[in-house]
Amino acid sequence: MNYFELFKFSPAFDIDTALLAERYRELQRAVHPDKFANDTEQQKLLSVQRTAQVNDGFQTLKDPIRRAEHMLSLRGIELSHETTTVKDTGFLMQQMEWREALEDIRDSADPQASIDALYQSFAEYRAQLTQQLTQLLTSEQAEDALLAADQVRKLKFMAKLHDELTRVEDALLD
Image (tube, rainbow, N blue to C red):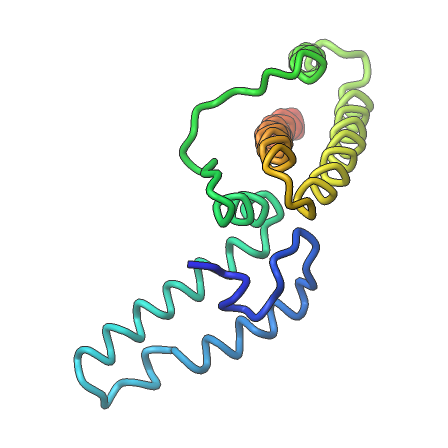
């Protein structure tokens, strides 16, 4: 299913999330199962299915990584269950540096400063990746779609690493 069509958006990485939320509420009102309480069982079932599609579409489009994955899936590139790894050696080296910095936080003289520095580093790198991804997703070239898929893989890694850093920070605060 094309969630952009469902929510009446042109496929684009940058979307108006406030408008997305507004359209979500409109769709929910239109297909909510309570609206079909007195209808046939088939109508009720269709309503439940449609509500699930609307919910899934909203969750997909509101999350930038899932939105990019959806855009790529519309172009025949499925990333949601893949195990392909990033082959960019520069990114792999950066991963190693971040992992080492993450491991060194507990022994740091100023753990909070180390955490803040990592958050800043993540934000800067993620901003670069997102900017590149936005450009690649606007291209119609198949090669650019493959490059966009690599950017999404990197962003997924960044999200996991960000979660790890948050857990380390939470553990230090306890």
